[in-house]
Image 1 (cartoon, rainbow, N blue to C red):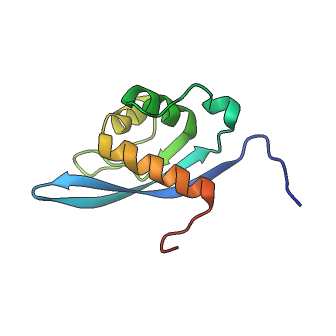
Image 2 (cartoon, helix red, strand yellow; image 1 turned 120 degrees about the horizontal axis):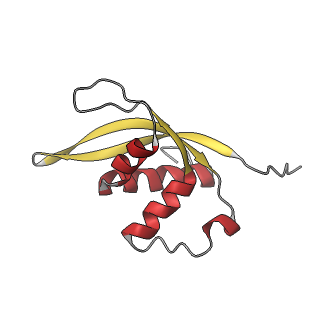
Length: 109
């Protein structure tokens, strides 16, 4: 039986490949997403930066396990969200976590 939920959400780890020196450093945080339906994504092409940011503003409900440059935890807020979305490598990681979560794929599959 399929249960029709009006506003389903899901939480996934977000693995960010942060550029560092001549390599990358994997950093992680958790994001809770809204499972958007077609009406909520209509008109979003996700082909450019602005459209991708708008998609993520709609999809991301909250982010946890975030830290500032000093390593101290910082709370989620709209300003924090915008700071995360300003980083291309973070947007890529959020999109990957969202689509993996929507498709029910697990790492290693």
